[in-house]
Image 1 (cartoon, rainbow, N blue to C red):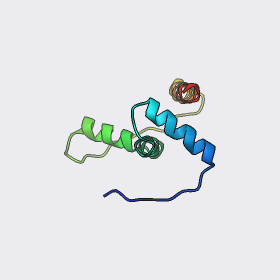
Image 2: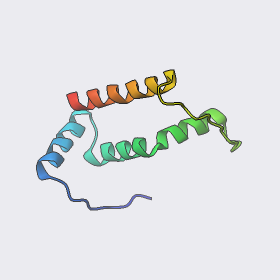
Image 3: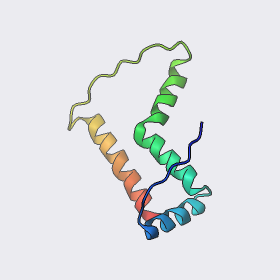
Image 4: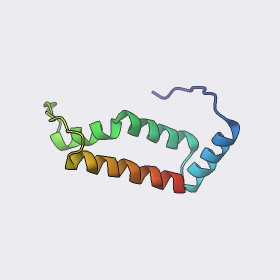
Length: 88
């Protein structure tokens, strides 16, 4: 169920965000919702559910050590996303 919410933001920041969303072919609300889902990991949960099927089984993750190749890859992916967002 969708819910209307109110937030307080700097006016110019909100206007830039709305223009950015429009340039991406979506609404500010739609983009904000997508960003929130990404931040909360909802897309990851949905993708893992699809991979695991509908059996509802558990997924076991091993901790990633800082400085490991996987940690470096995740860090690079985050930096790349930040660069792309800042360019738009």
